[in-house]
Length: 381
Ligand SMILES: *Cc1c(COP(=O)(O)O)cnc(C)c1O
Image (tube, rainbow, N blue to C red; front, top):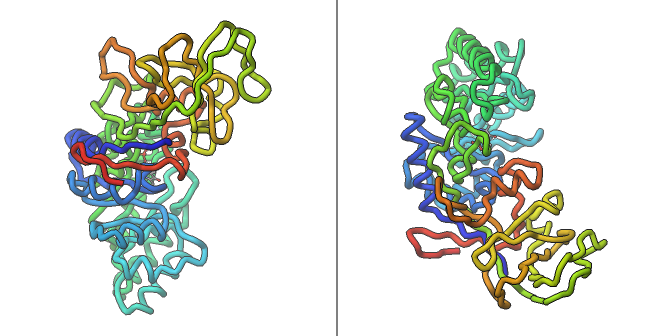
């Protein structure tokens, strides 16, 4: 009854557009099931479009790519405290290392397998999430060099992540680039010679040249969403890859004064046609967008009225000629830039209505929404 149609051609085109600006190798970030788009089909499209690397947060995500036959280099960066690194090493996945504890566990796992593990050391330049900071960094790189010299690991990369890349020109970017350069200097001073040094996400890749280095890690922009919202520095020619669509499953004509959904928080002010959509907050339509959200129905934008329920919501179609089964687009590519014609909402607009970021809108689409992948017009599930 509802499906998220993923245009893999848009994913490929977005990556080429970003590559033309960044002029570095790209890592396609396919964590969280490819931001809800399907990690494996997105990864295949991304590699086909020239992405050199794939990025994920967990062992399960990394191994799912390998199980699907993807053999591109993969970096995985969030680990359990008791992580069994043998699985990542055996699958030839690069392991992000943020602490001596993790380094010890990777070295132990490599020894058990009798191979060398590829690691990428993570510095913390300000996010205070993972990564090593302060005195922990010199200690981490010193020990990493020792283990590298013994052959149990190979330090392939040094990397970090910025706090405010989506605010172009924010002074924190320059500060964090300096902190990262200093971390790199310390790593090289300890004898490391990483071939891959990286810092930029989508926003930094598009607007902060000093962050591009050897590789940019691209999430949101690959999925076609401009990382700067409506007030951003121009447009980059990206095309949203996901269209969330459904159908009218029930219709009724009601008089003025009719309560709609729980509460009711909404009462009709005139005779109108109410169309029921089989999508609710369990499918990712946030309740915080209530009273602000619109969908595309019968060639117009129509408001969602009343409370969004777990499985359904009600659209006020006014006097439009709507029939049972008519298609409804919750969000999609939206209008062509500069086009005067109205069009369906975008995920970025839904993010504004819900008071969140587009990442949360995209990753929030529930599992009962079928993903349908379009490649050159043909649909594959
Ligand atoms: C999610 C993530 C990215 C991708 O960020 P976007 O802003 O979506 O491009 C890059 N690097 C790290 C470490 C991430 O966690």
